[in-house]
Structure formats: C-alpha cells, structure tokens
Length: 150
Image (cartoon, rainbow, N blue to C red):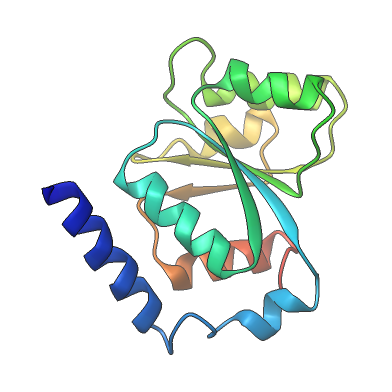
C-alpha cells in the first residue's frame, strides 16, 4: 500500500516538474519512437528512469540481469540504447557491455551505478556513464550527449 502511494506521488511529481510531461516532447518527437533496454534491478530508481524515458518518447523493455539482456539481442530484438547497471547477478553490466561490443553491436550503451565506475564502463565499451538516481534534466543531457535527442 505504501509503495503504491509512493509511486503515485513520484509519477505525479515527475509529470508536473520541469514544465510538465511535454517539456522535451518536441526534442524527442523529431526522432520518432525510440527503443530503450533497461538492464538491472527493478527498484525505485529504475521505475523513475523508466517513466522518464517514456516521457522522452522511448518504448522501454526491461531485463533483470546481463544474461537475460543478452538473450534479447540473441533473439533479434533491436534497441537504440541500452542502459545497464554495474551490479547484477548472473552477468554484471561490465561483462554484458564487453560482450555486446565483442559481438559487434554498435548500439549506444550507458553504464549506470550508484557509485563511480566511469572508467570501468568506458574500458568495457560503454558510450557514457551516469551515477543514479538521475533526474529529468540529467537524463536529457545524457540522451543529448549520446545523440539520441537534440
């Protein structure tokens, strides 16, 4: 019950902050529908990130660990960006990022973590790194930096 109320408050807050849910619609609409894959633990930070990506016009898929994320690529699914957590069971974000690059996928990969593992992700082949949680403005800057919005 408390979680439901919390998520309702967060969603409402996200929709009204930063000039409302349409603040960046013009920026993302020019690119059409984009697909994002979130790979990591499903917690509040992930839920907020998913909502924010959807507000930018992304269709968001989720995988709980690097191995299940890799299976999506093996099955032929296509994404514009993979946002992947460092710490996960079975296959962590660094291993999955390295494997995606070794398999030749030139997709945009963003490593995320609650602490600074910037260098580790870049060495594994990520295009960018971001400490989480992040807000709408930080996500906009990140998406712009990797060329997914302008």
